[in-house]
Length: 146
Image 1 (cartoon, rainbow, N blue to C red):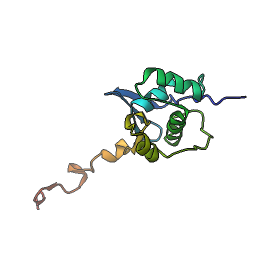
Image 2: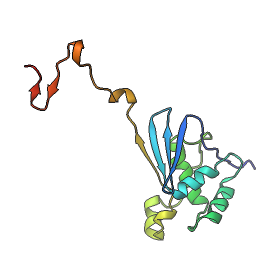
Image 3: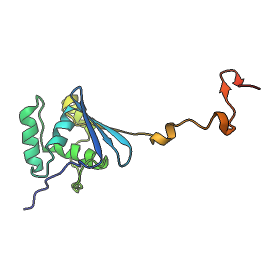
Image 4: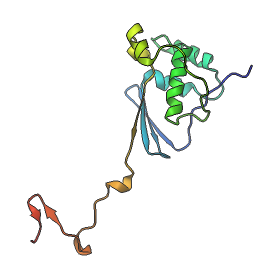
């Protein structure tokens, strides 16, 4: 049987570790992603050589929280949605939703969370023309020189 061995995307990403989380900025689509500790551990273990079962075992051995295959599959679905994997996830998730799991288990820190936000293109941050170009300058009280 051919086991799924997810591979994290590495091209066009800027990755920074910050206070136990992983901040991933996608240079291709200008989106920033924040991976909590469990999600970061899972993502870092997705090297294309480990199966989902092996990823769960590796992460569980270094975590204070129980991590099983269902937790890994949930994280993989989030990574896939955020375009953070080289290998697409084709498995449909079964079982409880993240909210149901939090309610039943009460292990908020053990649930992999990927938060994403679109970042504006740096060109949009530029100010408009001023000065000798003929544009009118303004102060807090109205046009300057009027």
